[in-house]
Image 1 (cartoon, rainbow, N blue to C red):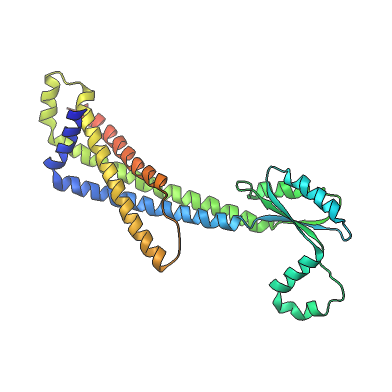
Image 2 (cartoon, rainbow, N blue to C red):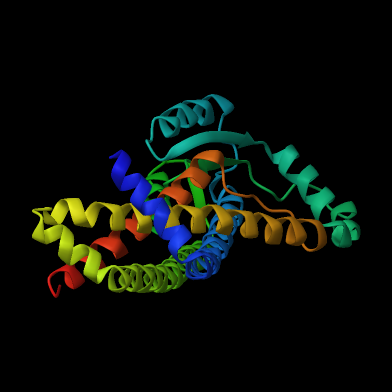
Length: 285
């Protein structure tokens, strides 16, 4: 292991310009991946915040006793998709309408009686805020005998689902493209190193070195370059994030676990690229 690490580090000294160039290129490729992932995370976070407003409203028939509504709330809370249920009385509904619809204040002032019904506001749990689950809950709520109407904004929730799917698909495709570019870059760098050491490798094989012994330093070389590229990409991503966060909008950066995962992904890409490149070229030597 010590010999393999020393040989891997020696490749940096043998071709410092090529090593720096390859690490920088890898870093910029991973930097683009990092930006795409960051945008995707922030879009998903924004959509999650919007998704918290997803609710099903059950309008009750006039004269429904509070006791009956309370029993219904307990039954609804037993639904696995439901996070909470709130009761809005007729008077509270009118008060909210006055506060939120100030442009109709004259209409409210002319009312002789409250036209708004009491309602139950059903909040959905995370993971159940898509159109299918909301529709299923709404259908069950229509079975309440004193339910006058059930509303949940079907079109709005369907559009929210489409936005989630599009954001995830775009992030995945762009990240995969630049990850593939990183693999090609690392593989090319390792291939050049193999070609530089063709004679040395041939001599090692003549004296009995196994393929694994010859291959291992190159694998470490690719892993080191992938890890260094990942670290540099994280630094570039944070610099870009800090500028956007200060000048444009507030967002979230990678958590420590996500940062480690990103660097680990760079290391894994370097290892994979090295394994493919070295395996093919060693067979030709």
